[in-house]
Length: 84
Image 1 (cartoon, rainbow, N blue to C red):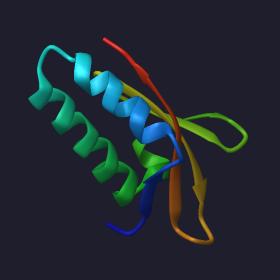
Image 2 (image 1 turned 120 degrees about the vertical axis):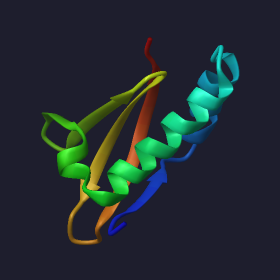
Image 3 (image 1 turned 45 degrees about the vertical axis):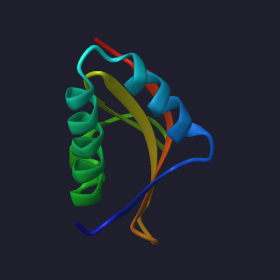
């Protein structure tokens, strides 16, 4: 794991709200773990580039939106949405 991955302020709470209503909490826990693992390994290969500076990665029940700072090897998750 070569990249630091963090949630922007307030975004972790949004992820927890999605997690709380997920029918299978183990699936939600595993999905968040996979999100962090993929982004930490290679954020460029993990997701899809949407527009200048914005990327997305979908692992149900989450879709995360993130920004990459290559100079710092830092990924910030800037938004999270529920997906099915």
